[in-house]
Length: 413
Image 1 (spheres, one colour):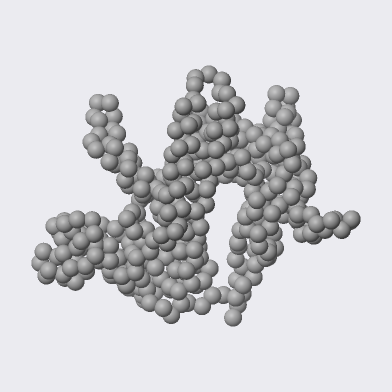
Image 2 (cartoon, rainbow, N blue to C red):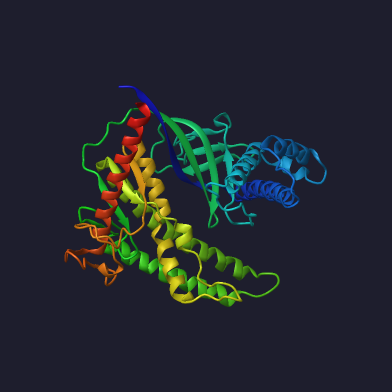
């Protein structure tokens, strides 16, 4: 069996000193300045009807900025993260201008939001995993970052594979590093377990076509409820400290508390998504899922001043519930883990999956009198609404795969 190369990321918390924390913040500020300046330049060119600059042109401008007197402070930071910011911006611009599948236009970055440093050259990254120094004292492992030096890192698991790049991020005032490695693994074998249809929901996180409903354990739900209550309290305290003009130190400290409450809730949700996607990818060969347009589903119903929307508060609550489920993150994790283990994720058309009877195929909105009940008005078939939808998704996936195989055989003939 042939080996295949796979990439995996290992994320760890960093323990920089106060001086290293300041240096990392300055370097992240330089990367943010390069992103905003290049985005401003590209936006002005687009508005003036001029062609956008390529990454090569932007890289030449970066060299001029680093050597100029006005922007010479950029040369105090490493050049590779700044170049990587220009690469990311160039890709984001072309994806936003894609007519077939346009994405959101890049936005300007503010201080403290998404600060990151990506080091694409593995030769500039060093790892020292020894736990004792020359005097025999126990010390933490450390990582070498260009123009920062050796920074302590808290390894929670062993790093496997050859290091390809590293990304340093700051979230809620805490620095972390994500190390991407490449490993040779045997080519995975296709699972022999049956295919399933998966219906994502708000009341239950997901429902399988075999009737299994996936949701966090009661203890996890209780912990998430407490985390949400704490987040609301911290946000109320932050709103009371807000004032126009220069912000006080108390406001900055309270803003950090809100960010860390957000981080705790996000970590709990991501832990559930990781475990659920791993368990599913280890047992299933093919998972059929609805091709949901999450951005369209969570648009505000506020409308405009001339044409105000209706049920704005109810739609806002629904949008919040949908986004809190983390469907996009779950599907990305599930797709990558299925591919790593020889499976695949197939997206199907979501139209009428919740209104179609899985027994006779009759389509009617009257088949679903409420959120949880499905009862066909023709054949009187009754089932849980989410289970019925999952069965329809499975059937739609089979039909799509059959059409794809037929088209492949015709083209081959």
